[in-house]
Length: 133
Image 1 (cartoon, rainbow, N blue to C red):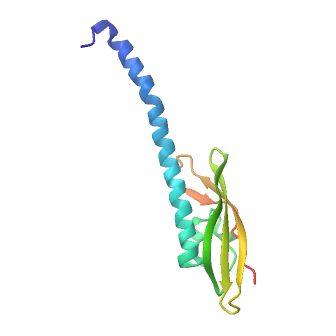
Image 2 (cartoon, rainbow, N blue to C red; image 1 turned 135 degrees about the horizontal axis):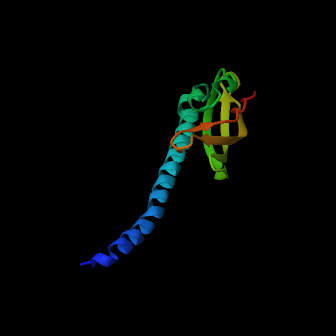
Image 3 (cartoon, rainbow, N blue to C red; image 1 turned 30 degrees about the horizontal axis):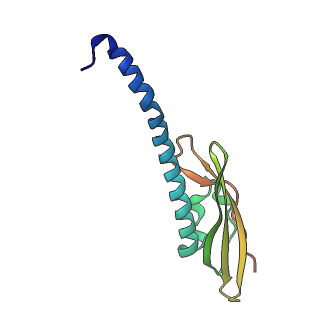
């Protein structure tokens, strides 16, 4: 049993010990949101086509038009790296074909992702690459 004169000190020590845990939970949620956004983005490009990526862009008007393009593979070649508190960069290698030519092309896509203040929503801030013939 804690003696009454030590109760305030005990509460202070407990508060100090739990404070970093709260911050790490927030950081964990932020990282989970980023991981989810990046994985969904890659899956959308690969399985639904590059024309369906507008929901991931901060400025959907910056998206190039894609006609007759199918993504064959999407692989992250540089893992996400923190640029700023709310900004992360990653590089992905995209292999794609134009349905008219059936020639596989490759482009390295340098991506910048920005989060809201809470870190719950991540959006791509730079435009996606044009997938040329």
